[in-house]
Image (cartoon, rainbow over all chains, first blue to last red; front, side, top):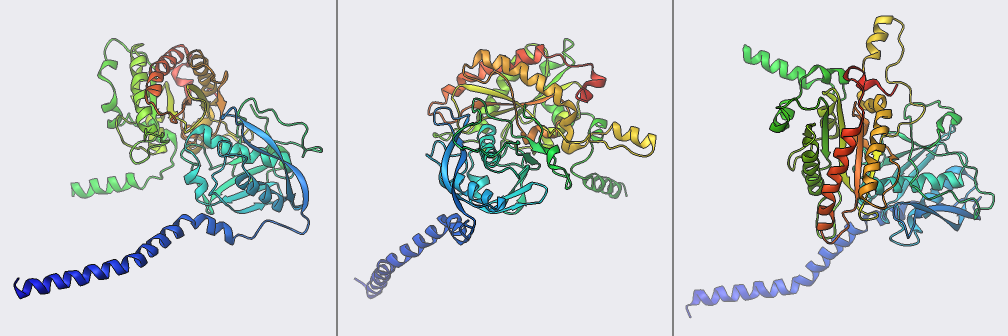
Length: 233
Length: 264
């Protein structure tokens, strides 16, 4: 074998050996990067402070998820949650529970990776809920699916809070045209008037039909609460 | 010189605000795109004066809902629209599609197609990600009850009159909402006959596409894309087309001059 060939083979052997030796660390780095991407939403959620306040008490609350037997209707479920006396914190706790405590995957209305980034409640009863991007990207596309997602928030807030009259949904702090391609997020959604349940297990709202998600007008800053409560069709 | 003037004219057109008033659209004849899409069969034999704009939702890079086998909502609704077009044209109703292939016009582009027409109806077609398979729902847009009329009153009568004839693009559907609800009821009745388990009445929901349509407008959503055998959806195409054809033919549209102001 000519000398040049021998040198070439030796160089290739050295390179192959180096590749074999460096492969594990390379693999480790790639997997690390992948893991970092996958847990982006969880990481974001982890840095959010836990929703707990000094006024928290253990209370029964009604939360709305999909009916296991009828995927186009919502069904109330009664859970015991730590709920604040402060309406703004209470709303955060309820929406977070709606995301994190869904009874099953088929009953889920909000994506598991979605996070409520902020929730503001103005003195006139206007609420602004700011969700992470996953709320838009991971909600199944479709009028029905998107309507169920917003309905579950609206009905959960209505059942457990008497001071929220309309809701604006933002995604990552921005106005979004639609939730996942269909449902109009440009306007406010009316929270139907409903006294918070005295005995939470009683007087569950009818779940025969999907309720209409009623948008409220978005440009009425001084709107009196009583005017933003039209009857659903 | 002529080229410079043309460039200036084009620049002026581009400078128009994207959300303009519908009267601008009404001054224009249907776009060349619409003219191209007009089926040749609709011209002869004195076709019906009404036009149905069928809107296969999504398209392009936006597939909409995806099934477990990769079936895309954008493809399914295009097939639905083609079947519905045949059913409508059989009744000598003029039909336009917002897309003929895998394009993805914006919400406003689709709205512009119908807002430039008189005596038109708009039907947007969708397939849900989940839900009871084999059912269909008709939707109409639900505005808040306290939404003020789009044209506000002014001090001078001429200005007030001019404003009264304008329709705000972002709330264009508001003047047609009653007709849309009636159309949705007609369609839902026909859907219920053909797809057992469907709701008996149409559903009010803020479907974005409908908000900027200045004509009776509904969305129909079929459940669902979550099927392993695409034939199940294929089999729904003809009954869906028949339902749309029958409902549209029976739907009483007011005379053209007042068609777009029937709601208020």
